[in-house]
Image 1 (cartoon, helix red, strand yellow):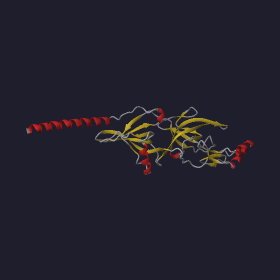
Image 2 (cartoon, one colour):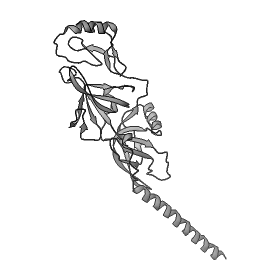
Image 3 (cartoon, one colour):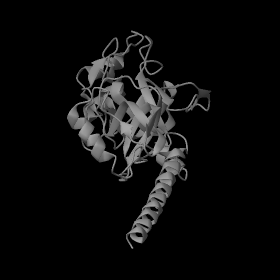
Image 4 (spheres, one colour):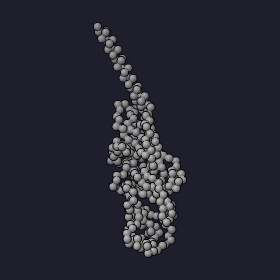
Length: 295
């Protein structure tokens, strides 16, 4: 009788072990093959730009604006119809978005052509402004990262989704490391929380292979991450009168031709401040309008 019980125990043990091993092997195989999700819609990841100031020393608006470049792409479609590595724009139209410091900005927007009597120039109409979390220089490629809320018993766990900006590529990854770029703990906490939302967090970085009981997978190691600027907040610099004769209103020093015009006298008493579109400009009061009309 005891031999029969022993035999049944052995058989039952082998059966349970076989089932457990089969489930484990299935989990390993699932993790080894990184799941490629249905492509994100172009509207959710498109038209993201990096931006840098133009420090060339010539008259505004031909110089002194910004150079913008589509992330993850070798060429950018400029407002003049040309395809270039980066495009010059005379200004940024912040519209109803919140401004962020240019040296920490990752912007989503549309390139437009606008002009005045001095000619036509490109403008980036900003639709979303995202701010870098530290002074760390971004490298690698740019992604929108979301936390899927998945927690696994065995590592690596495909717990996050990354969507490559300005493409339709999207896949699951085994997490993202945002702790090594020098960001404040509070910003890291904000980013972790934001990843659980629909918009996620924008991350620049490279991939690394991680291994564990469940196999091998890719994780994203951040070189920078960006939080979306809240509407109603602004970190923009104050507007100043600049140019050779104080005829330009901007938030940084601009060069001009130093050819004096009588209308420049009108700007001496005019208010240089942020306008409704978010750009610096002289406020068109009745006094300024009347003065310019007489010149």
